[in-house]
Each structure stands twice: as structure tokens, then as C-alpha cells.
Length: 257
Image (cartoon, rainbow, N blue to C red; front, side, top):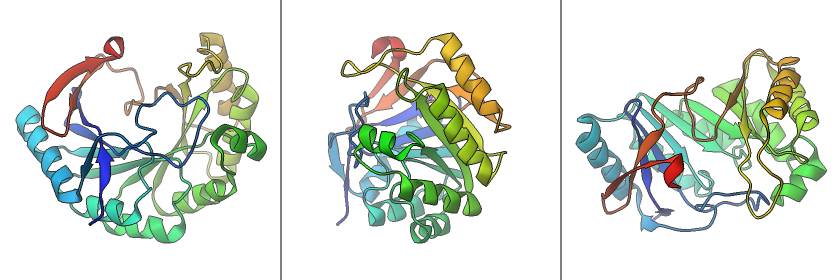
């Protein structure tokens, strides 16, 4: 039986929306602050995980979610598991995948679309191949090709984390130029870096604004955002509900992390 390790799922307090977090990642990003980059959590089969999503949603929302985001770690590590999971989440109107895009070749994308996938949110770490390989341990050439393929088939949002001195205004503009060559209307989100492992620092407001302006030279839909945010504007509600594999719920916020 296929399985993934699941540390928790997350319920939005803005609308009936669930994030499914699958731990483990193929990338070794030097600045990754996520506790789920390593394999942590409970080993769960698809049926057990879907049951948790349904039970938690019905308990908290009194109905099933209209939107489900599958994230990580890296969501695409187990192809069979992901395909099966999506097919059993078809009670939700919108099924979204957050990914680094490395494994999403045309055949895989077609399989996921057939099982109900509506959108891909792809985290493009860097455009410069040498920089990407230094930061993640992997070349980005496969990813860049996959970006082109994904856009032809399904709604695509591209995201990049601004890291002062590493993934800066120049690199953001290079990414925006690449994305624009595919389609200038692709939504592009610039997220702010949270320092980890002594790498870099928080970007200041001026740096984020300059990066935004650089991207806007090439793209129509540019947003300064955060990695965990779905809305295009800052929501008033800034807490969420973490649901652990045993069904325990805990309200959390950025201040509690």
C-alpha cells in the first residue's frame, strides 16, 4: 500500500478550506524553515487521510471543504499516492497542488488533471541554474520546462521567496521575464523570507517594493504575499486550526510559532 507521512492538516478560519501537509522533500534548500522538509508525522494511507479531512471539516465547518490544497514538504514525491488522493477528494470543488515542480512532467500533469486537479502553485526558487543548484541541490532546467507544460494545461500560479543577497531584485526580475515569455498574465507571488540556519535576513519593505516593481515590468498580475496565503490581499483573520492525525485540534497563529 502507498502511504505518506502526515504531521497535520490545517483548517482555514476564513472559509471552508483545508491544507493537507505531506512531509518529506527532494530539495535541500539552504534557507528552508519548514519542519516538514524531513519525514515527520504519522504514516497514513489515502483512505485514512481522506477520513481525517472529512471528519475535521464536518466537525469545524459543519460541511465539507470547497477548497483543498495539497502541500509539503513536497507534495509530488509519491506519484501513485497523490493520484489516488486527488481522486478521493473529488467532493471538493477546487483541488490545488503546491509543489517545486521538479517531478511534474506532462504525463504526470495529465494524470492529476484527470483525477480532478484544478490549479498548480509552483514555487520557483531561482532562474539562474547555478544559483538554483547551489540553493536546492538540483538543476532547474527540468522545472523551467515543466512550468511551460503546466501552463498549457491548467491554471498556474508561480511563487518565489525573496531572500536578501541571494534571491534578490535582479533574480526576481529574471524569473518574471521568463514567466512573461510564457504568458504575461500568469499570477506571480513574491513571498518574504524568514531567516533560517543563519542564512540572510528578513527583507525590508523597500526591497519587497523594488522586487515588485521589477516583476511588474514584465507581468500584469504580481502580488506581495506570504507562503501560506491564498487570498490576494491580507486577510483580517490571521489564525488557523491545526488538526493532528489523532483528530486533536489547536488554534494557532504566527505569534504562536
